[in-house]
Length: 175
Image (cartoon, rainbow, N blue to C red):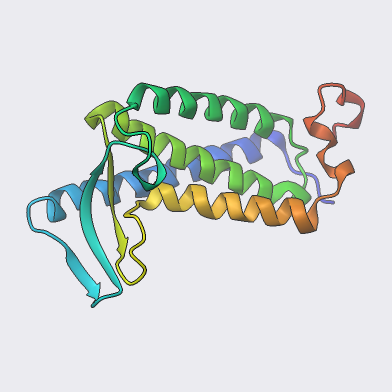
């Protein structure tokens, strides 16, 4: 396993976080500017459209108007991700795990920014074919990264690969 410089890895993680967050915020800004007053933009008739929605809940609109709770949960998730990111060995074996951490963090922060600014999350991506709930780019980051994490833990990582998660693991840590 090729080892990476910790500073370079953290810098790349921060750059990736900033770029992903910027993409999320720009797409939400465009949705507000172009969709809020004009209605949906049909990209594929009866399949896919862009439609403005103010989501005051969580996934699928559950737990409406509990913004403080969602902000606290996002902050806790960010703390956990930061802690785990700093403890991960800096080898290529953990690259996808780092990317997933960055995506989940940027998705959580992107939606947290909306909750703090507007008291709701701007959603705009709609698959009308299957009547799927409307979502946004930050939601995509979180869902895709979570699926990849599940697959990594199922098929790639063994128990010994995750020893860095242990509080007693200092002797196992690779720099």
